[in-house]
Length: 114
Length: 112
Image 1 (cartoon, helix red, strand yellow):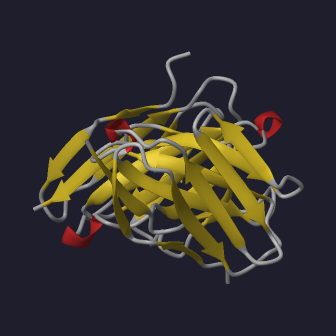
Image 2 (cartoon, each protein chain N blue to C red):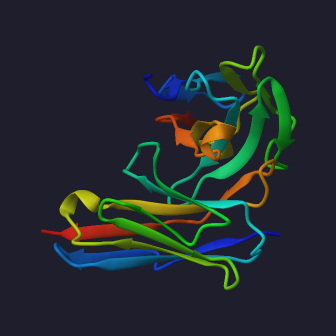
Image 3 (cartoon, rainbow over the protein chains, first blue to last red):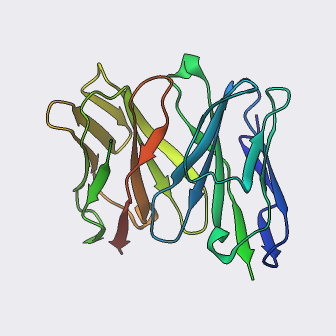
């Protein structure tokens, strides 16, 4: 088991462009979470999935943000019409109910919007 | 609304010292609490998870306690080492189907 992986690790884009991030969770984990983290702050919850169902979305997740987990395996997070305020580290985590939902995090994708 | 705070925001100690990091939460009806460490520019590494029915968990030099009634958890690190230098975050989940809320973290520096 290689743990949670995220791609790309770094993304630099110009304001107004669309970006998409991918997260591959630990294979047997049925829950997958997305967080956003800015410098000096703890991660802020964005959304989470149980299998392919999106169970909760934060109000931080504006209309420009969308997340999918089509087959209950990997997930994508898309940001449309990026703004400079979207610059942050985007973290993905996965968990398994049978392991008390202990969350395991990926290395993150650092987004810089110019 | 659940809020999570951590004190102190930063801590610097000499190598070998025992130390305590604090986490407070406003809603005591939690499902579990998890402690993480984060190295600069990296993702989070899970250290310990305490279920609501538990009072403490131990792993090596780490011991985490939970007092739901007072809304507090502590992370005790024994015999600190320079490799312990990182940011330590606590996170609480209200129910098994609820989101996880993180504190802002405590930045720890262990001086050789």
